[in-house]
Length: 113
Image (cartoon, rainbow, N blue to C red; front, side):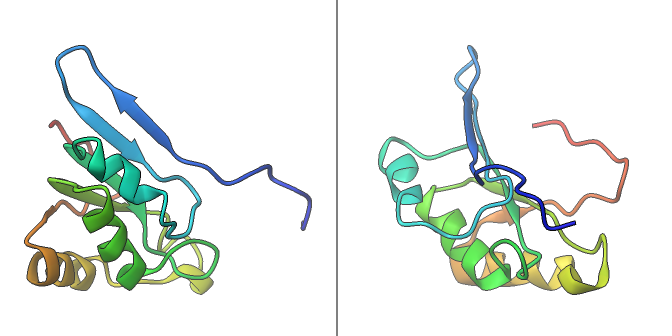
């Protein structure tokens, strides 16, 4: 409806076992993401690829490199026409450009790191 949804932001989650996860939320590519990579990177990055209200596939590849992700799960795409994306094509682009693993999840499915 156009009302303010708050500030876009991501979360960096550090678990006691040493696992680090970055959830980018509804964000675009920012140079600050490099700080996460410089601090040691993450085991998993959840990155939006929708491209209309968030970063798109090309920027998500760059974000994965910035945060030095070992694996990426694409998020925030294909829920309505303006953010339609080919997640498998993104996964292949990520592997080709950055040699980073990508897991594309079907709605309602689970992933264990």
